[in-house]
Amino acid sequence: MFDVYPIYDLQPVSALGCYLYDQSGEKYLDFYGGHAVISIGHSHPHYISRIERQLKTIGFYSNSIVNPLQEEFAALLGTVSGYPDYQLFLVNSGAEANENALKLASFTTGKKGIVSFNKAFHGRTSATVAVTDNPKIRAAINPSDHVSFFSLEDLKGVENVLSNGETCAVIIEGIQGIAGINVPSDHFLKGLRKLCDQYGVVLILDEIQSGYGRTGKFFAHQYAGIQADIITMAKGMGNGFPLGGLIINPSFEASHGLLGTTFGGNHLACAAGLAVLEVFQKERLIENAQAKGQQLKQLLSEIDAVKEVRGHGLMLGVRFDFNIRSLRQHLLFEEKIFFGSSSDPNILRLLPPLSIGDSQVDQLVAGLINSLKNEEFLIH
Image 1 (cartoon, rainbow, N blue to C red):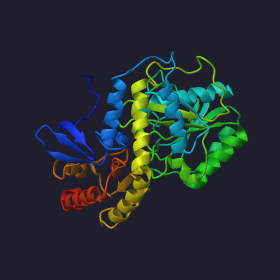
Image 2 (image 1 turned 90 degrees about the vertical axis):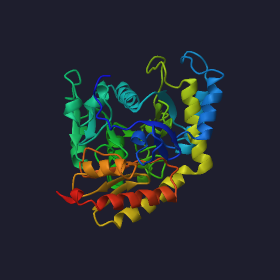
Image 3 (image 1 turned 135 degrees about the horizontal axis):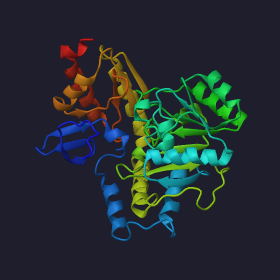
Image 4 (image 1 turned 90 degrees about the horizontal axis):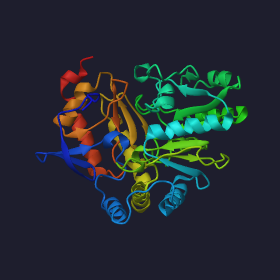
């Protein structure tokens, strides 16, 4: 294997609900969801049944034939997301969703300038890595001279660039995930919406990590009461099946060949996507994410070592005044709890399945308190 991933010496061999099990039968609480991917829980019976049934009929054919599952998926997604009139284009990953969103914005406006934000992460493909604020993963073939980066909340700086008339899109995460759970204010998102309308610029909301019910609303930007022109999705969309997409304002005009994909929107992907939305509705998981998120915020804020808990729903960042690397290892190997990290070394990232209950919340809080008794973590 091409050695690009730092990995833990741990091998999960099965998973169920909110738990993973290794080869020796050890049980781990999953409060990371494999990068926010596991939305309805591991090995959900309805999810398995939906995919099994589909696989026994037809698993794949290209987008050159009629696939009624795509229309069924688009209709249900529109209803559940609150964007019933938007158009759906299905792909396989978040980076691919953002790549197509940026390309569509440029096609539509005839321009190439893009506004992005400090600490943003939008993917590793050509256009997406250019709007990602990490030069270390940007190669010589990924020019970013057409991209302007600003701090969150800097409306004045954004307007100065948009007023030049050379910008096709503003792209922003509903909540910055890898950066450490940075939440743009409602005022800022409303301001971006207003500026994009004023200067004829496409507003792209990257909801790949913050979308799909994770924050207690279907999309994080809905807390601000705005609508985006294009919204990108992936992660929890397929609960582990490779699935991504973008929903597109009806004012955008499609033409044959404008965008394309071999695997996007295949029969199995649609079955997985439908299963996730059906479980969302039946088990009221978005409401659960909001309720459990509020519960976690309250309980975590009462821990002395915790300096801040930020985010919405079950997309939370817990800030300490020390590097959390050793704490995260202790939580994993001693308390048997998976957490996430971020580019901020003091932030512990929580991205559990949206199906967690009170017992998992209690286990997490108890595990964190136990780990924090180890004084080595408190050494700055």
